[in-house]
Image 1 (cartoon, rainbow, N blue to C red):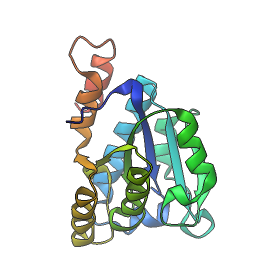
Image 2: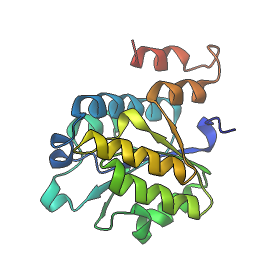
Image 3: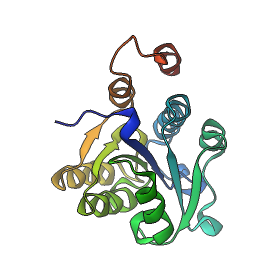
Image 4: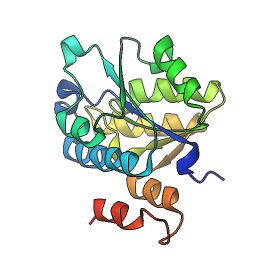
Length: 182
């Protein structure tokens, strides 16, 4: 049983960049939910790491996500499909000291999938946010989610993550989080 814990979570946003999101079949859904999750991370104080795959060619992280994250997120460039292949990313995750990695981004079947597999092999408890992830084609996205489940990661939605972090309507930040989805 895996229930997210805000104190033991780190959010890893994979390649939500201009050219990649514009080619995604579910662009609007990714953008909306990535912004909600980024704002929730700020409200709850969950550390956030953002990867950018070859930004010179694919553009940087979309402005809406940058604005939602504010100054607290770390941005690291990568060229390998698995973010963990970049020593700076692996080191940042290790130093954070969190065991639950909540991951979402583009493309589900490539960079998200390969990063999830690498994190699991390092002993992390990995949760993928399906409605904040995407691919160029829906079938690739769905195949990626299946592969991720086969590799023992958890697959949930944005709202499931938010309410698992809160645990109760008595949480001090409940109203702020609830307002993100109204």
